[in-house]
Length: 621
Ligand code: GAP
Image (cartoon, rainbow, N blue to C red; front, top):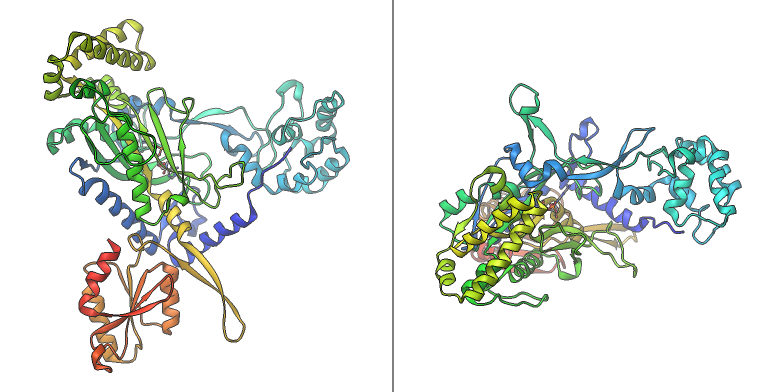
């Protein structure tokens, strides 16, 4: 019987990061002056710059620098019919329990991790020690009358210890010990087993939890002045659905052809039951989503004779016309990993989770989650951090567009000339084989989506006949990333501290945020050596103004140069330039040069002002 407690060292690490984030203006609690609001976070001056950089890098990599992706910026509130078609109205829910005593809500899958963090559970852990199977009634009674009273007042063991312990004693006498720690705590929470069976305790107060019930995560609102059922609208829980809903408009106006993608960055809202781990699970957050539309494999086979095979490891290289969903999926996983590497998250800091057949949605072919090893991440059996999801890359078949076609009655299929021509040249057996496979896939989708067998067969026949004439509903690969989680990953990855001892033997902790220059909120600090020397100040302001149109520059003339460097180190500024007397020509050969200092090792070198801008641009882009 063992309880995995969150490692104190890791909690401390997160506490330090949270404190630096507030102190330096990366992240603030939303509405802090009113006590905050759970699950909502604001980004301060440095956080706002960091976020902007990340979004711009994603947009450039995914949309601007590619021929085959177009951008979209859709509204947050859309027709509620969209959420019916996507399945969010009916199925976007987490099973949730509520406490009968304190009324707090707890996500079922987070019950045990939350329990492990509670002081009352931790204080009981010494009694409920791993490896002991005896009922320590005396100690439990003592705990109930002392610590239990203040920590978990609604726990059955505290309210009615004799009766509560009698259930466990009865079972223990029969040689039936609680199977694990979770069950042990359920015994301690159960007063009337005959009526309720074993119940789970509330992590907050020990009270009895209800059975889990589905809780829809979408925030509801109303459009217009009347709060009626007809006027219900939802804040979008993901940006993806707008892309599907605007698929035809974008296709027609962007002169794209399948395969092509639509990218979008924007806010999403989920009424998370238990927002956790700082900004990791928030109620308002931002997503960067790409829906990359591809031909169904049957169309690829008809056109190219076969579908390219790929190994599951490594980047498959430049996209090829004969790629099916597997190659495209592999391509996007690797492209996204390259993106993360390019902004300073090395492969060692990342993890991967390929969803199992049981985890996958019925329509999905594959999904790989890219994880980041946060200090609060779970550990595997070897004690290694497993990581938490940063981004999911899903091969979603033609489910989404098919749903919107069915629900809106508007066609979502495309006509492919190449397919029609190729189809007509295929031998009859090949046509029949492809027709049958496409028909089976369409029928499976329709039946799984609740369409009766007969209409599903009729529709699938029409769809397969359509394929033979060059029509299909595109399939999609969806790389879907969270901006806020990435920001948190970049912050925890950048955080470093060292203890420095000065000449007098006094220790001082030095904080350094080692952001990759591409994401760093401030790219360069411009510092005049002295602020009371007008010539130095004038020159420093000239350098600032020279760089400002190109990057985020911070001009600082306050305090000793060492203090100013330390301030920039904490902000994660990769470079500082100092304007000194040599810049003004005290040593003639150094006229119009500056001292450039590197953040990570404090090394310095001399650089000409005329070369400074290009030198910096080469490192921050
Ligand atoms: N369209 C697919 C989709 O939304 P998801 O896995 O639910 O998939 C995608 O979300 C990404 O959005 C996640 O990998 C995560 O980075 C981010 N995300 C989801 N819920 C979040 C939350 N409550 N707080 C912060 N980020 C979240």
